[in-house]
Image (tube, rainbow, N blue to C red):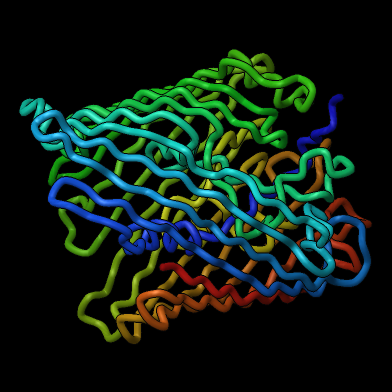
Length: 442
């Protein structure tokens, strides 16, 4: 049954949720500990209220909905003297969507699910191999999140469609925007050399996500990190897809090769940062490419430490975004535009994006941000025209060590409406999108 249509471009997720998850694990409640190890209880709860004045799935009017999930379980580690350290985790996720469902029609508000999320075991070498450095050999396997490089090609398995598409056949359980689930179903990962100097990763990844056609792939990265900056290479090879869930576009992942080169440096300029990545895909339909260049500067002498970043990204007409996603606590990484990337399009194919980001911190616990995006469709003769602009204003407030509140207000203005080759229903006027996300971790 070929049910997945590649016009579904959203990949809902909230960068802050990922960051909270990482912080939450670091601050997990300690159940027991010793000089060599510890067992922790992990708990992350996230709830969001969303409202969009306009829709992008053919429904007139707007949508008002809520999403939430709770991730809970245990994690820990145990040292074995000079033989290294074993570690692992076992977590479940319970998720739901209420109300109208999201503005892109990816959920309908009836989603409820509890599933296993993390189930992995690993071993780190400690000082067993001095030439590789501290924990210079790290092997893990099981159900876990895997990110390669800067997340431009592989960040996680974070696409969380609900019951909207394909008569519910792709439903992953709710919380589409919050992206309750990120783990690959089966993995085997070897990391060599730590994080400094020459180091690399080899991985085998298998998705159980029907919206990703349950893709299986192998990947390798080689990186070199120094005081001058970082450079890296990535190779990804598609091994298989489940053709029951793959259309012609996704079937090309079987045998696909992806190559990329990336770099990051301050170029000797204090408080500056420059980054780029260029990737190529070789598949049955030909060669595709995607790339970005980015420059940023933090004004350390100014009040609130404002930071300004510009990025240009270009995705060719048939580029396959694979498992790209948000790679940090900063909104707007590879899900560009809260409305565009999640509901309206475009998302990482047949478009380019000019992006400006401004952030400032009036106090240690509070970050204010403004994100601007200018989208242009590269080829519109056979596809939807998704030209448009978006401005997102948000705040991230750490109320205390366990609670973070993130309000956001987005303004999205497409060039065209649904009746003129676009996706927005009820005209091409500016859509106002609002959300409030509350996250608690213990």
